[in-house]
Length: 265
Image (tube, rainbow, N blue to C red; front, side):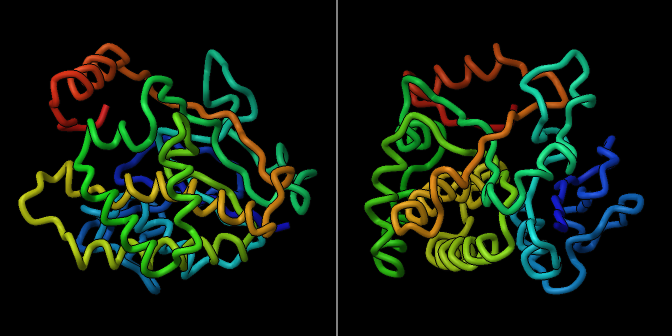
């Protein structure tokens, strides 16, 4: 089977050599090309929305322009892995051969759950970002696809989620998801926009999509379109060290002092 996983990147960076990967320059509109990376402003695209939609402009490009049996997304500094840990993470970046025998049986590959432990997805968003964005998303879902409301309420109460907009899915499921996702996000933008927000907080569409991917997936399971046995978690690895002190301090300030996040970690 043909598998294509785009790697969202905005600068030159080391890339895995496996043929299933396509480095994609996200937000390429109006910018010089990055080496031989695929630009996300070719074909049908929303590249100019990258300051707000982040890696989702790459996801949109893949949806509209790629033809493969499975399509997925990873990040230049964050990858699926064949093993949970390694001294050199580049040695264990997922290869097509690692999942070859599962294609056709596993229909959705997701990163290992991100656990917040003392926060739900809803409370974490409320403490670190602007909760009216998530509340407005719920309103849109209630109007456009109300059958998803139970899955929404269930997902946001969890203390874990499949995050980072990372997945590898069968083409038909990928297309169904993107159709559902971008319909909601474009409506959200028409209602709220980015006026008055910092560049960091203007990128909330990518954060909303991280949460509602879990909503969509739960609903597909509930409807019987995807069986739990057809979903597989893959280890997630970071290619650079995370400053956990900085991240943890920012989280505690957000939760107990009301100071919203002001940048990425």
